[in-house]
Image 1 (cartoon, rainbow, N blue to C red):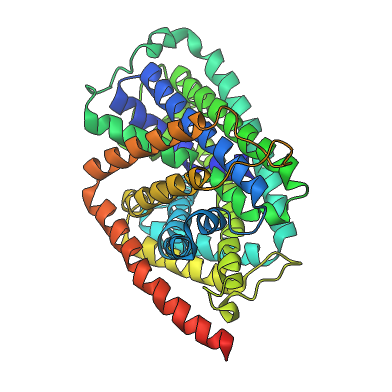
Image 2: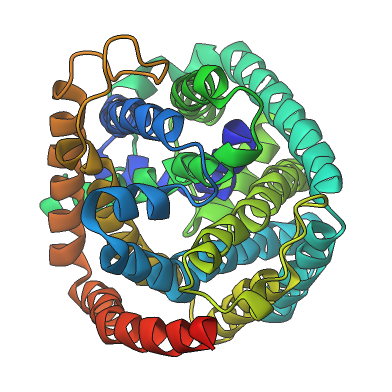
Amino acid sequence: MIVTQVIGVGIFLTPASMMRSVGGLAPALLVWLIVGLLSVAGALCYAELTTRFPQAGGGYVFLREAFGSRAAFVFGWISLLVTDPGITAALAIGFAQYFLAAIDAPSSFLTATAIATVCVFGVVTLAGRSVSSVILRWTAAAKLAIVGLLVVLGVLRAGSAAGSIAAAPDAVPMSMGALAGAVIAAFFAFGGWWELGRMSEEVEAPRRTMPRALIGGVAIVTGVYALITIAYTLGTSGRMAGDSDVAFVADVGRALFGPTAGRTLAAVVVVAVSGSLAATLLASPRMYLAMSRDKLFPGGWLRFDLRRGTAPGATLIQGGLACVLIALGTFEQILGYFIPITIFFLGLSAASLFRLPRPAADDPAFRTPFHPLPLVLFLCLIAVVLILFAVGRPRETLIGAAIAILGVPASFIAERTLGQRASS
């Protein structure tokens, strides 16, 4: 699930602009390495938390146990209104961009195609967890096979690209803004590994499985991103052509598959994004299941089917808000809408380890090695990314913060309203 969810549209939308921004392959690989280390450090923290609290909800449960129900509600509020629909909308737009490129259709159909994509995958999710799991398995296998093919083809064309390791010919001078954009893009490309925590209640032997899945999955993704960036550079002799990342993918397709096969790689991206979108829609409703259990989310809206693993009401809310975002914003605007607040709560949920007592030596829960070093490293990197984003995208950061603040009075209303209904 981690490989399927994380390796999606990000790796195909970010490499060209990243390498143009930071000045070549070597700096781009350094960005991947830094963000990869951030993710591994965070995965270590989440591995401990998920094995200590193997319940539906993930970060919501960790915040509730460490900081109380109000902090957990605000996180759930943000997930409902910002994070889950934002990620869904961004993936749907990425899917639509490359689907239209693969069939050589005009970009004027982008919005309608993205909305239709959300609707189709929402229906697939409601077909049940078994159907979604088949999609996850096959798209994960397809992604890794595609990466292997791209790397082989890139290496075969490496003879004319010896100088591309040092710098991309069309790179621009490095600036703080360019570095911030590269780091933010890389974070989006890694985004989603923490969502596995929402499903820990449905995982067999979570104390054994979750650490392996989180740490191993993030490590695989880091290696894949480094390899595919190298393959892109070798395949195009370091030329990051095109005014957009879609144009870059077409350029890579022509370089690796021939002059008439530019649409082949676009079809590859469609496959990659399909798995990510299926994983996102599958995992998200588990948050609202946890909130409903705590009487902070209307149970009538949820109607969670434990046998099928579906929640029609929650999926409808997530998909409906995603369609609104698609109609109102561009891919970059949607990223700016949900990334800063997602980063903040990701760091806050990991910081639960500071508040919670350490498990005993004989406790079967996974214990983060070298604690608290991975947590400190993760929180420092989270702070850096937040600062970069706030400086580069102040408007979007403020919008996300305002929605989070509104979650505080909303928590009082939810407690009073739902509490009264429960007592009556």
